[in-house]
Length: 610
Ligand code: AHR
Image (cartoon, rainbow, N blue to C red):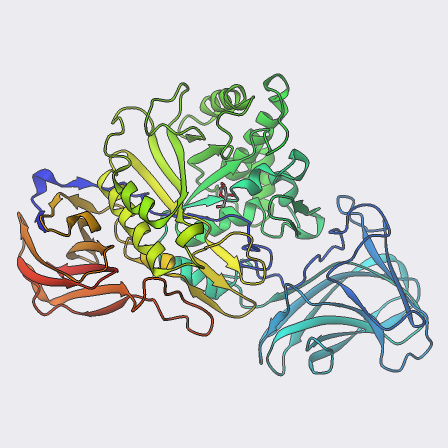
């Protein structure tokens, strides 16, 4: 394998090449990175009709001790449903009430503080007991008495709960032992140690930070479109005080979200990750219905408002709402995607042009992403980038590493915003899939004069609700691990902004190899990284020869990192999270000419200190 590292043939990879796509799918947000422990905190998930299903809330007591029903008496006009709890027994011995198991159980940890907020109304004074308890209610990890004054007004209660024990599948209980009626609404329980105090689950965010993402595409995917427009993500309903957000049912992935993780929080997340925000907005098109171009104007205005919310000064109409939420400085939204996977739909082009022209006029620096694939033929409409999605089997993806080799070098750039091996040979995220993906990414690096951005999809899955398989990061209430596809991405985290160099491979195995070479700098130190995928089942010996370097290779500080396993179908799991993870060792023979051995079915990175 020859690397020509001379500066004349080097080309800079875009600073944005590798980033992330976060979609509210698989409970990635609600019950995922958004640390809210209460599910259906406003009792809104059952719909606006009353009585309604309060799932997953449930009752402590029985028919003769308690009667619980929803009504429309909330103090919040945008989410009017509240819960009315009537305690029927006098001096109920053990207390009766309601409990919420969160998202398949709350992770309550010894010594940690949990912040409870709830809105309560009771005509007569009452003492409520708020507890964190095991799923059967028998073990109490924290318990406090909350006195409620007798008044006809709603009162906001804020209470800290400190856990005296750990239980991964806990529930929040609110009980009373006195006859009377109490109303509840907007019951929230947040751990006090969220990432930067911004509401994100710290350990999941660390896994993202480890990949050094340069952009964050959000909030979907199909989630943005909805099966029906009435269920699509609406940024306006997801901002402002959390208590006032109506929440919505994501009908593509079939679950309710309180929209605690809303448009503002996505912008905040991008900032916290050091990633450029890419706002995918609904373009008036869902999976089953469309707004005609003649009637799209209010949707265009809505998107312009969303951009003012993100970018406007703190004195502007929508910028002031952002500022009131705690972020007076604008969020630097430089990219928007006009819809998701809607190319070819009846009103796509017409609607697209309305959005495109209005955004270009108001925000000339914003780069706009079309849903139509321009990799093999030119687009018939203006765009800065076009979206490219691929989900396929491992062999096909491996062979797709040359996809952009012949793409026209003029015109819009490519955004490979969703790629993954799936279905036939994907397992639940196998080494095999990750090798094909790695090969595909080496092809994107080589074509990064035309490919500007790429992200794996989907990013997260809550193990209790896997609607899409496989995914990069698997978690439950308290554990998480990366699939091989997650670890594969770590090999590319230095690529954005690095220099790429031409390579040639002459080997009888070249049909099953894929490789790339970059140089990059870290804290004043320079490195050459040669990445090689061996997709075949034979061990391969290669000589790596490097020419054209301005500095010599130093064995000290040079490493080899390998992602492999004894079986190409191997996967990680909660019981064995490190079965397929990269292993790094010192590269003692690092030099301009060196022999390397590539294990069968492996992805290797040779990081040479200069
Ligand atoms: O990543 C899962 C889904 O795949 C996305 O929602 C959609 O854009 C694509 O079809």
